[in-house]
Amino acid sequence: MSIPAFFRPESAPFVVRPRTTAGAPRLDEVRRSRRLDPDATGAMLPSVNDTAVSGADARAMSMTELVDHIQSTHHAHLRTELPRLMQLAGGIADKNCRPDSRWPEIAGAIGWLSDELLCHVKQEDLVLFPIFREMDAGIPSGFRRDDLAAVLHHMEARHREAGRMMAGLRELTDGFAPPENACAIHRALLASLAEFEADLRRHAHKESNVLFPRALAVL
Image (cartoon, rainbow, N blue to C red; front, side, top):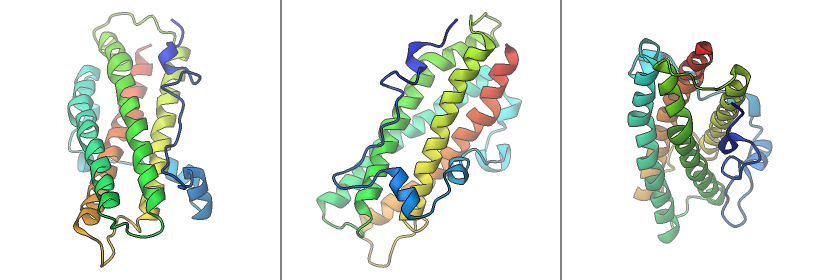
């Protein structure tokens, strides 16, 4: 089986288009201006210990159990938290309590994360994870190993890009630390971003370091 069109780089849902507010620099400009190392920041998300941080021993699960766990825990969290982060960001703009001149970059990064990650989990839920369940049940997937490896490479690239965006957000917000004069909405947004980053680390680790290698090992 060849790579599904849904996962090809030229397919519209897959192309990474960083979203920015008016006048907000793109992420690559943020990284250059703040000397963020693309390789280091991109690799940050999967650096997690299975049980100590993630709260679940992903390596002890079957592939189907792990897919179910990721969907019910991390995908559900993304679908709840991303709209809430967007709402908090909108609240800051509506109340005109923008923290400082970096706010357009912060708001643009949050918007990009929402667009990109919701598309990412939709692809996994509708296409990739059902294939993993079939593989776990011994049903031939029809995939050649090289084709599946190419799909997973694309998905891991999106994990790295999300890692770079979170690193940019951490830098722009001084480590998600609110300034003394921060309003209540601003403080809630920064606390939520810190929690979101922690969950995203666990999520990416379970997929990139456990689930994807296991799927390739089946073929």
